[in-house]
Image (cartoon, rainbow, N blue to C red; front, side, top):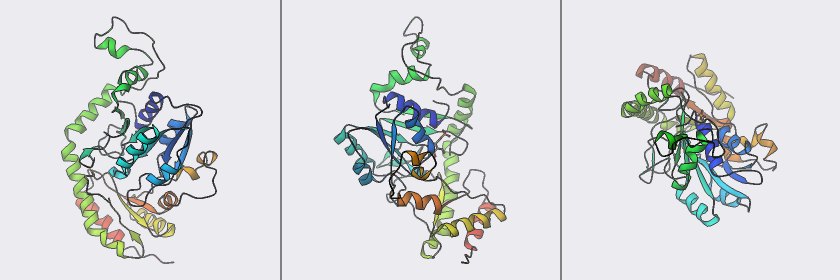
Length: 327
Ligand SMILES: Cc1ncc(COP(=O)(O)O)c(C=O)c1O
């Protein structure tokens, strides 16, 4: 357990010994923590575009970005949907790279029948208040490559072997390595346990809401305003979000305004990191990362949370269906 997914990403960077002179490839349509976990240790983030259908890292762009300095590829299972993970694993083998899987959106979802979060050398989870299972602020690092387990315990315990001491494996604990304090408070862990005990109940409700949105709105794909796309593969995803992609930014912003006026909170999502103030200091090419740009300006998320009532969801659906865009 860690205090957040951001801390878990930092811990993964420390375990991977990511430092000055190293490059880490990551999708530009992404949360900032993926980049700060790299730059914090003096390494360079290399932004690549995402693919249209999964919103995840574009495998061929990732391959093109590999150089002799590349140390790792970090990717996101966006909305609980995997990109081509098998392709990423092959790439990692071919070029001897580490894989960091940000599974903040994907707890309980699968890829080819196996749980998301089980594929990278390191996988990270978020239990932030916005996630399906949450304790306000919280996270976890899943160490799938066992050679890193011992050191992970040491780094998160302020560089000491205190975990071994607690298990009775050493007589006293001392400073042995690099470290920080990356522990989750027990009170938050207790809150999280309550959520995990209700995992099925929470997800059944979320999936019900997701499917109602899908059934009521998927015909909008034939309209000139929005596209609704979900998952190329038939793997399970656990209804982390329901998004629409508007045909252009004005249509998206117009719908956010309309919903806002009706008291309904809808939200855009990531800004393409390569175009952010800090990101531009690393991404200096003229060429825009088109898919990431498009999603920054055209994607919108509808309310999806456990306590959203049927009546409230009907109002959201009605408001979306009643939206007329005038140029
Ligand atoms: C993909 C992804 N990774 C990491 C984070 C950061 O998570 P946390 O707030 O737990 O640090 C987020 C935040 O929403 C996210 O969307």
